[in-house]
Image (cartoon, rainbow, N blue to C red):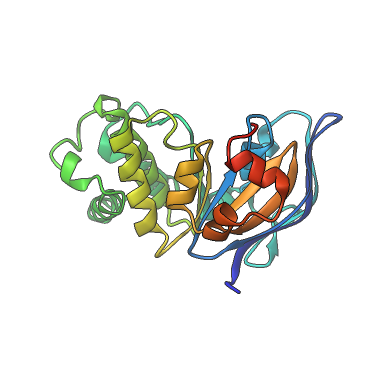
Length: 252
């Protein structure tokens, strides 16, 4: 059994009176890629946002149960939410680079955390752009606006921006849904490299992507965790008939 980096224990999420997630218990293995799949509106993104308390920003959202990072409870008075979001970074569905240069996008996080030495910032920017498989494409454009990059480049820049604050976990919310097939392939290849040093959790509506790119897969349906396990077993011999129906396209 692989060690768990993050774990949910009977985690439920309410938006007002609506119970969006229902007693989710799940262990996320360390240095692996875990995908979360399910039909639209099943709670995939809501579950992802539990892992770095992004739901705190939503009016009327309330969490029951607990989520742990390395055994430490996330929902409690002692948790520094700013530090949590440094450790558990997030890449959104639509690339969202800041309206500033490529260099300043990556340097932004380290600057916020107190790093202002130019040589150190240059080292961080190059390292993170290399990690994001983007350096060779932008090394001569570091002073150019990040908004001038292609969609796929912008998404890899957003990944580099997350890497710059040295996270432990990277959350990706449908990071390829707005990208062409070539850019999608580059992101998937990048994920395989990143898992050597980070734990990745990805929400995807693309079951082929989940089967290709992840080590473990979780299936949500109407806010419930129906099945979770190693991806190969999940897609070849699902234990639950609802999982089988969904992955074979009979419904959903």
